[in-house]
Amino acid sequence: MSKKATIILLVVIAVLSILRVVFFPSHRYGIDRDDNNAYTEYLKKNNIEQKR
Image 1 (cartoon, rainbow, N blue to C red):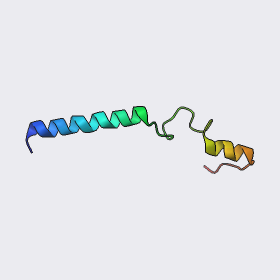
Image 2: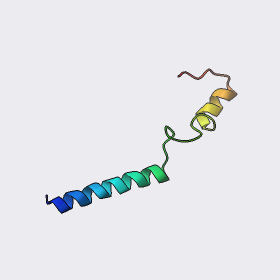
Image 3: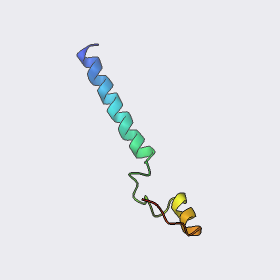
């Protein structure tokens, strides 16, 4: 593979990774990670201690 093709491939992978983070934010990196997700609501409703 030529040097130019390798650089283009790396740029495409980087752009796709950034777009994935922007459009599909993971709960691990989200702002309201523990506050508003459905699992935490379920635990609160049923008075279950959350294991860390």
